[in-house]
Image (cartoon, rainbow, N blue to C red; front, top):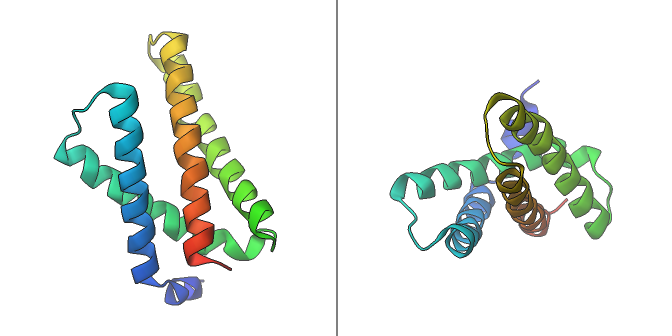
Length: 124
């Protein structure tokens, strides 16, 4: 059941996490302003490492060609982001739809980049 965990290359996982953190901080700085706190960096690093671990878990179920593999993984993450973040946020909180669309677009860009670096660095 947990045999896939033995196949995780933790060095590559940390590289993906650091690259995700760097890209996310750049996007956050451009969209939200230059103030990025330590807690934001730590949580973003944990998110990047989690994305790499999720990729290890599903990589055998993805197509073999690089572009298709990257796009399928990006679609999977974007779909889950929309279902488990965007929709509940819209339904539970009184947030302007423009702000929610902005968050979705920025997370879309970050998740496509995360899928690219996950597929490129971790591979098949």
